[in-house]
Image (cartoon, rainbow, N blue to C red; front, top):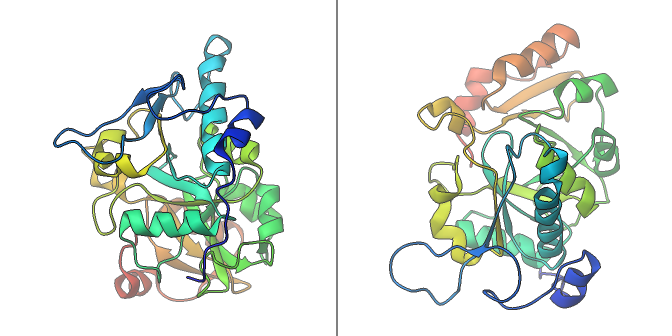
Length: 289
């Protein structure tokens, strides 16, 4: 990756801008410190905030205070250049500002992820896709698949940070079918880089305890409760990744958890043709975390 652009800023100023007090871990900041069991570590660990109810559905009025607190806290950390763990509609993920090169570097380091593997971009609304991508599919197609458990790969626009996946002109777009993530992306007001919350090549995470080894390197963990059925391997497949960069065609990069529905929309409703046989593509490229 190219040299990181400074983006940390003053945490106190950022926190004040979203209505939070700033202080060291364990101070008056609300929330609980997470410390994985075992020997003491040099870093104190991430702050844990539990979403009221089910994070996939917006909290009812009596619980809005907790929901809003989690949103403000996450936005403050993201704007300061930190990495935050978040629930999505498929897996737990790690999010950071896609415009912050230092934060992008931090995600690769803490996952042990190859820099040849791209990070997806999470947005809050379908209309935002047109700002960050050159879209060559019908608008209705985007609305049929997003929000949802899919990653749509398209040609990136000049609006995205050049340090984000500098090795490819394409970018994968996610709009999770998850109320908290949509609210977070909209409140943040810019693109979020998103990847799974696990060490590279390790199983994906369906609850916050499954990635506890990463806690000391995170600023905040948003606990939305368990995602899916942890006993089902299908629940750990992640989103279906489909390349839509070639007009009139599609290419399944990763089968994921929504392959049947995705191909039904692409072929049955919009008449797109497979660029390659999905089985051949999957065998060639293999799973990606």
